[in-house]
Amino acid sequence: MIAIDRRILTHFDFLLLAMILPLVIVSYILIGEVNDRLADKQATYVIVGFISFFLAFLVPIRKLSWSIPFFYWINIALLISVEIFGTTKLGAQRWIEIPFIHFTLQPSELMKPAFILMLAHIIRHTPPPKDGYRFKSFAKISFYILLPFVIILKQPDLGTALVLLLTGYGMLFLIGVHYKIWLGILLAISIASPVLYSSLHDYQRKRITDFLSEKPSYHVQQSIIAIGSGGLAGKAKDEATQAQLKFLPIATSDFIFAYHVERFGFWGAVGLILLYLSLILHLLSLSVMNKNDYFLKVVAISLAMLIFIYAAVNVAMTIGLAPVVGLPLPMFSYGGSSFVTFMVLLGMLENLLAFRFNFMYNFTSFGRGP
Image (tube, rainbow, N blue to C red; front, side, top):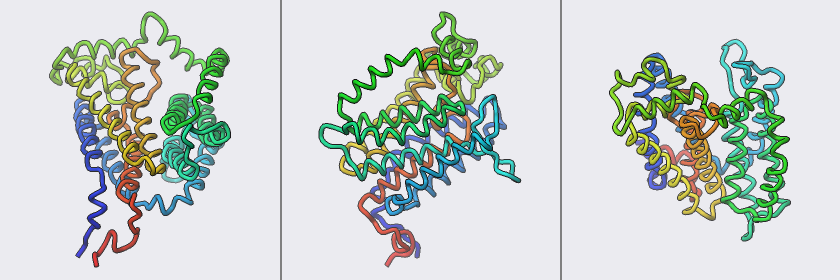
């Protein structure tokens, strides 16, 4: 008879999955209303995502923690290989094509779990003192944050590079770094801002210019019209003309929030934002409840930071409060790579939760009982 160790189920966080399911379901409905073919693809991505979640959950992360540096450096090598073997799409060289099967791989997505695990691995072995990390420890951790940032920035992929940078340093802020280091960083950024701006690509500077101009870009204008036309309660599918008549660009991915508000109105927007806020707060609460387990703590905080950055930037750009940078709404926008990445990260977190009391990873734990 097959049995599952009850202790695993006891510490599995079912609430986390319960918060994700409404995002997946509503997203599928909205994508299907705009494009049936994309909805079928999204269903495949969801299936692959949940399979990836299950596989990530089964990996004995704590027992295999010795291999995390290898995993990190393999992904760094993949990022560097993009410069040599990379495939260019939409003016950016971010993908590697696998021979014979014509499947493209985006190493920057694979880098996210490797990046978070590496930071967790380092902080687990050298936890911060009471007054926070000093310069030597901060510089060591910063090396592992800045290395993928610089490589991804050269692809160019400013959005993903900044996401990793903000996730890494946002996590460090909550973990604990001496306040003098943060003051020094703020001063350095303020002095170097003109140089940083001049080093951006032309299209990146244009996005900032469009954002700062009095009149928003065409995409943002149509997004604001869609959001305003939703009113309090939203519109029926056939009356949501901004998306149905193709005025709203990329309604299934970058601007899916605008279409969501057009369909479900102000209250629908509030509900979606509250769902993301609840998910982020729940992840942060896991880090507080397990304050001595730095491995779990870093992964939970980093995942919360990732979701916050993606969601905040995506919503802000649809209403003209941030430049259009192409960051999807987590587990809501159409697309496979981002969804699978988040599901892998959630599976890793569930593993660290369920096995945080050092249960045995053997046949008895998952298979036949005694």
